[in-house]
Amino acid sequence: MIIQKKGPLKGSMSVPGDKSISHRAIMLGALSEGITEVENFLMGDDCLSTISCFKHLGIPIDFVSNNNSVTIHGKGLDGLRTPSVQLDVGNSGTTMRLLSGILCGQKFSSTITGDSSIRMRPMGRILTPLEQMGADIKSVNNNLKAPLIINSSDKASLLGIDSNDFLRGIHYQSPVASAQVKSCVLLAGLYADKETKVTEPAISRNHTELMLSAFGASVNVVGNTASLLPRPKLTGQRLSIPGDISSAAYFISAALIVPNSELLIKNVGINPTRDGIIRVCRMMGADISLENIRKDGGEPVADILVRHSNLKGIEISGSIIPTLIDEIPIIAVISCFAKGKTTIKNAEELKVKESNRIELIVNNLSTMGADIRATDDGMVIEGGRPLHGAVIDSKMDHRIAMAFTIAGLAADGDTQILNPECVNISYPDFFKSL
Ligand code: S3P
Image (cartoon, rainbow, N blue to C red; front, top):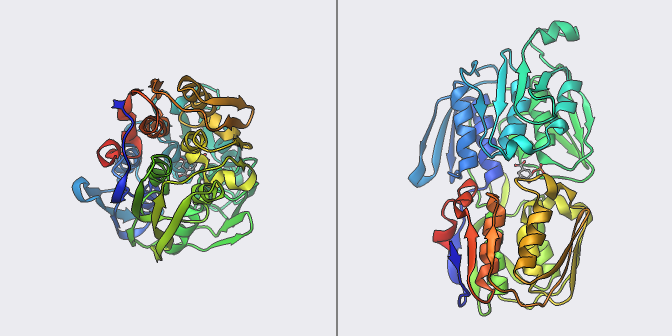
């Protein structure tokens, strides 16, 4: 894919449904009684992996990809059946970690694996709490990575608890602010003998907590601690998924850095655990307004109006990081167009995403002529140096491919994105929309 400098972006658009919420809709729909109907589901490869896993677990799921609607025929908390194959999550960390929590609560054994990127990512972060809950879950290669094998051996009698309460409720103090870890533990907690609590160092995205409540579970959140009572009766729902702010971020950024742009991005989720990109852009001096703010399916939604702006460098660190973790590649790009220094700290999690994003952002932006250096937990960018086109290796990381496409729109000369098809993970129509 070749990208060239382009005139202003103008008009109005919408982005596909939120990836995190789409995964959770399939999972909770499957564990509910009755039918769950989902509108504006994200038909990206990651969410299709979640659908495929739940089909192998015996859940009928119908979808019409041209209108993004999905119907899940839920079978209740104990309705999943033994899969006849290894469950394959593809590239999806959310499927891997959340589904592992659910599988630990089942009375059958299973194996879960994924692509080469997933098999490099740390799973010790979920093995630790799941083992504390009494689950028999192991890394097949003994390296704290996927594939994972979950044995259903008679855990209840080993734990000395009722055979219907498969796991032990715990209060887990998570060392990382990770919604995937928190959600894994809470979903395992559906099958526990008593309340399950997770405390995290900073609040990560809360879609699991919101959706569990909407389906009828008893969830309580106080500060950085979320708790769940076990064995709720979950009931199928009608859901409409808001546009993904992580996908909108590329277009917000494009409008900010391409002169004379003015773009209205409609129906975007602005959940405060996800809206760090908007707060950061505003701190950098961006002209962004939120219009038509409303609630849809328990999630706050708005239309985002953004105009080209003169940006200034800032420091981005602390509790805002989990609210924009997936947007750091594109934030690094816009920082190159800001006046002065931008410092990103406390973002070491970037090293264990779909790629080592600190390394890929810094290497690729350096190739384009940026003044940028990596630090242990982030990066420092001196803005204002013009970028020039280059060959960008996305290493099959969708967010790197999209962020550098936007960089290419405002760089001199041609930018070539290698393996551009990886955008299918979260935004199959990205190039068409652009
Ligand atoms: C996600 C949580 C985040 C995020 C990922 C989606 C989720 O990961 O980076 O893209 O849906 O829960 P961590 O929880 O590992 O930070």
